[in-house]
Structures are given as C-alpha cells and as structure tokens.
Image 1 (cartoon, rainbow, N blue to C red):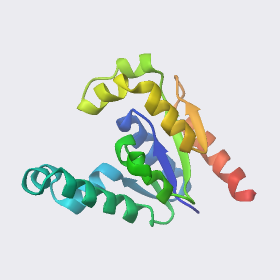
Image 2 (image 1 turned 135 degrees about the vertical axis):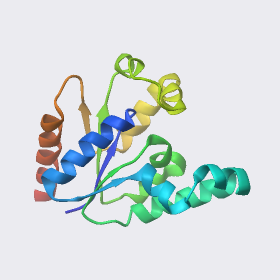
Image 3 (image 1 turned 90 degrees about the horizontal axis):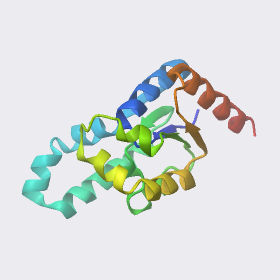
Length: 161
C-alpha cells in the first residue's frame, strides 16, 4: 500500500488519528517531528551552532527521506510539508487534510507557537493544504474511528482505479 500523509493544523490530533489508522491498516507509523529530532539529534543545538540555513537543509533531507518510506502513515506538520514545495516529493502518497475550523483551533491549548502562527495565517494555510490533498475531512465532532474509516474507504477506492 502507498503511504498516507496526515496533515492539518492540530498536530496532536493528527498523531492520534495517524496511530489509529496505521494500526487499523497494518501500516507503519511515522511522527515526522520525532523523526527530525532523532535524525538531527537536537534541532535547537543545530540552530544555535550551525544556523538557520544549515538546519533548513537538514530538515529538507529528512522530508526527502520520509517521502521514500513505504507502507507508512506519516503525520507531518504544515511547516515541513508545504515549505519550498516539499509536498511534491510525496507524489504517490495519499494526502489527507484533517480540517478544523479556525474557531475550533482557537480553543486548543497553546502548546507551541505554531498554533498562534496557524491562527494568524489560517486562510492561507487552509488553502495551501486543501490544494495538495486528495481528501479533506471536516473533523467537527467526529470520532477518530469514523475518520479512520472514511480515510480507509477513500484509499481503497483510489487504489481500485
């Protein structure tokens, strides 16, 4: 089975869906943030010691590497997937956008500064992700199991064609 990339502006929620989906489909799971941290040992140290340009280059290498995985559900933050058209590396992957309204995102606890940026740039990011995804699911109050079933059905239909 081809890779499935889970995108959206609530990364913690995406992780929950991604793990459940990978278990349901018998696929591997990749939390891209953890993958970058593992490969770069410490983004913070690299940024301090090598600079922003070098860090960006190394992160881009991680994106390229992840795009070559097989049979994997990959949860990837917007900043990696849409930066410098990195999404083009995932040509054969099935890309799913888990959409939350701006109001719903406002209610999330601010764990990282990215949520603040996501809210400020919401309409642009929503448009960017929508353009590159095969499927957009409006999460609303759906249960994770329902979302995973919706994704599975759409992946199956795509693979039949």
